[in-house]
Amino acid sequence: MALTIATRQIDGVTILDLSGRITLGEGSVQLRDAIRDLIGKGVKNILLSLGEVNYIDSSGLGELVSAFTTAKNQNADVKLLNLTKKVKDVLQVTKLYTVFDIYDDEAHAIVAFK
Image 1: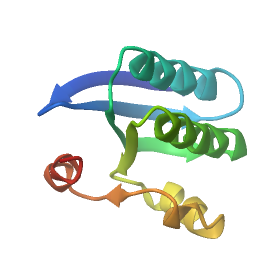
Image 2: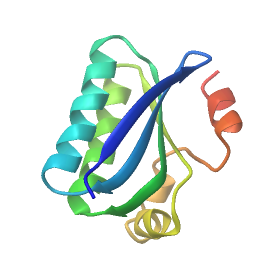
Image 3: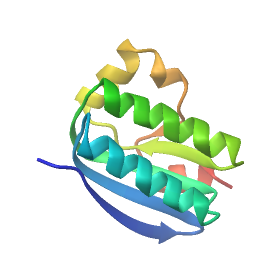
Image 4: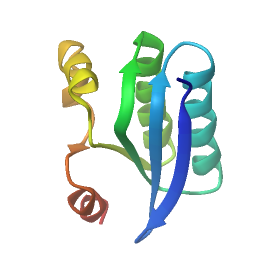
């Protein structure tokens, strides 16, 4: 299943609802392009909702780190929301769990950007 990205706005936060697989090739490129496009438009608060992501490989992890770094360099912020057990486990094994701000509740995540 390819990655699909739906974009919505709540209280000045742009939420990307991701669904499918973030893998080498199309999935990671889609994510990279979506985030760079938002940052290029001056968006400062980006929330990646990963509740429907059923698989992420090392390339997908690289894209998350790249998104985080790109955002920080542009004074923007990327936070993660609704990690599945698989994605959470991968982030913990790779120690990336400590790098990102991760939330289970959308309302708390949105408030955290203020």
